[in-house]
Image (tube, rainbow, N blue to C red; front, side):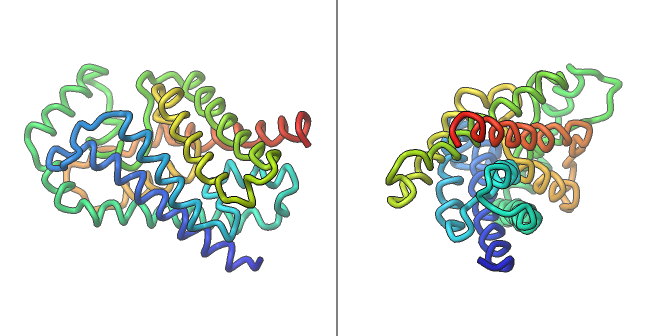
Length: 261
């Protein structure tokens, strides 16, 4: 498979992943959305279906859609390390495109939400409860684009992302040990269910990025979009959902090599 094939496949698949995943976050967040306040279960299943759709679309390249998966696959010999940057580039570009598409799909809702006095007052009040002297860390729509912790503790937040990513990546790698799964195509569905399960069981503390570009790409888009009253992009936290999943992916690749290869 050529580098251009890998790049295009990963770009399109990751764009769809972020469009649908960010889309469910937007649907639940916005007051002027029919899914407003649908809750965490809707978000967890929405992201699972997003993975399912994006992965089927990107099947040609192996549907990594995630640098943590790419690192693990390279460690286990599934791809050459020289191919990894091509995967990373496609994944990053796709994540940013997907975030822009969420903005376009919910353009009216973004504008209404960010000019709603009640929304802005609630957000200011929440910031004040944390520390009235602190600079704003996250705007009222940042959660549509990126993750954030419920309790801000660097070590715990990093460990949570590492653990959740190990579960995801190890499950992906081990699916290949069961004969027939890859040939039948059911592996993609099983991965989607794993992602849903991770969201329901391990997503509470940090919002389960488990994918560096899923968080970083949309966070960059949030910073660049001309949104009124959007607040900060919380760059102080941004390294955790990048570094944590990469460490988790590398550990999962190592575990697989030692225990299953």
